[in-house]
Image (tube, rainbow, N blue to C red; front, side, top):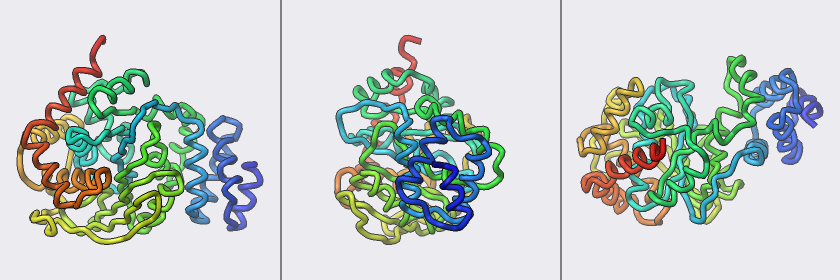
Length: 337
């Protein structure tokens, strides 16, 4: 099937859902050759991926993913990366706040590829053991309302395409598939994207994939997060359908707009220190960025206003619950080691 797909893509023709999904299946099962994978990914990128093609590729990748079993609705907070902003790990710190506020979070992430520090890197620097069996992550999620799923332990089939991706000097559809392939089947999601043109399409893809409640966001200063230093473009999904698009600003919530540089991160150790200071109650631009993103996730999950969600996020940090959540993750992930 991938051979036929390459011919269609070379002629700038869109793929059917079935052809795109089957082509991804051939890639993820190791049936496609490296040359075929490369041709498919480059031709798809040059043509421009449709919503249907992205949905089908995500479904094909999900079909080969190790599943984390859970019996409740969980939320994912994740960005595509690739924004080249080198900000600190806003979504990872926000995940701790949101889960401590009572919203179950199954965070999915990896080590850094385009930045100095990915979600896995900062959690490891904080003392969380990231390379743990799936069953242990399931138990931690049950006990704490949060777990971290280290991507390489769940997407084993990526071994077939990883060498090809490393050699390609341009982004491909895989740059946006990670946030669309949560192993816990998250039905709620706060997803950041690296360019504004992706906001509405990604919201529609999430809807197609069965996500019930979501916000797709792009900070207009280039962040794949809700920004504390610029307006943020938002597209929201409610009840599994595209709902509305709008803009958020820090000033709407009584927060002072900062400079983009104020959100800068560094090495895993430096970002771990930033995270501990925020969770310990330190105020300033970095905390504001975490408050904005945490509030959005709580708003998605509970259907309350952003203002109410912001107050809940504040109370969670200031009451020490978010820091306690981190300590629980550290303790339980290292238990028995």
